[in-house]
Image (tube, rainbow, N blue to C red; front, side, top):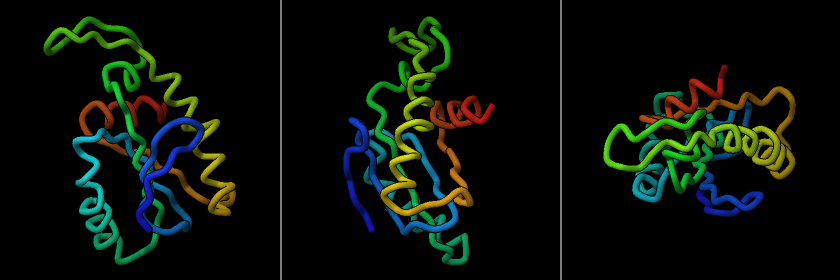
Length: 127
């Protein structure tokens, strides 16, 4: 299953099938076409175990994935520190909607992953 949809006002891309775990990854439009290959690689390395892969479209990485404001590191775009809003969306809107829509239960593991600033967001969110 590959599906781009809107959940609670945000664009998400869904791959795979509901199972005992769900991987959520921040993505942008540039990397969205690469998700199918990433999904297949994870599925292959996981010995074909099914899972739901959710790409959460992030429009402004410097705003939506940083937990506090900071001046620019590269270029001239500052970090705005809106990660709390992104995490709130994940916990209170996206995950409950996924649970409801796919019939996922309390035993489903939700894993947040990512790369670059998305990976740092995942580490921060886990704390």
